[in-house]
Amino acid sequence: MTHSFAYRVGQIVPSSNVTMETEIPAILRARQAIEPERFTFHSSRMRLTHVTPEQLKAMDADSDRCALELSDAHVDVLGYACLVAIMSMGLGYHRISEERLHRQTARNGAPTPVVTSAGALVHGLNALNAPRVALIAPYTLTLTRTVAEYLEHEGFDVIDYRALDIPDNLEVAAHDPRKLPGLARRLDYAGADAVVLSACVQMPSLDAIEEAEQILGRPVVSSAVCTAHQMLRAMDLAAVAPHAGHLLSGAFAES
Image (cartoon, rainbow, N blue to C red; front, side):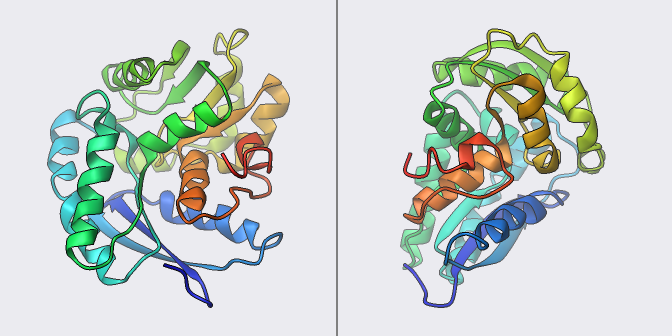
């Protein structure tokens, strides 16, 4: 559905996440400088304080309620804003989650396209034709390996990764994005087709994407940038926005 005044962007957000409600609006509001569409932003929250397998599993079980609540608002797209929650539930789980949450909205009489940040990262890397990647994640080493294994199951070769080992989710949000280009430089990225500067939608990275691309000399994405890209495509809008890196440069507007 569309509205003459604005597209309604819904997000299912961990209760301690303070980044996706800033970076997604920042990307789409920057887009408003070059495209006519306008957006409003709406969230429902799932309880999470520490990024552990136990809390992630419990949180994911609450996502159905959030989808139902957001469908009451007849949002135009629904985004599940926690990459590792999806990836820790099993290989390929983003497809199961997206289908289940869509069914919840349809049962409520407001069928809504659903984007998970995990599925969006897969989609974004495929759009870039980037089979070999290196990545940075704030998670423990175990959870970061889970992310790497998930991507490898989707057909990517994760040639290097860095786990920052920050289990407290608010501390993840407090990580200084200005450090990320330097951290990315320490990756073994020479053979990578793209670098994932933040494989986590809670760790801020938007302001560092373009700097990292200049330093590394290749496309750089984040989970948030990929989520914005796929949200726009789910609303049948051109996936373009300034200052968000190569994926949103316009070269992949219809991908």
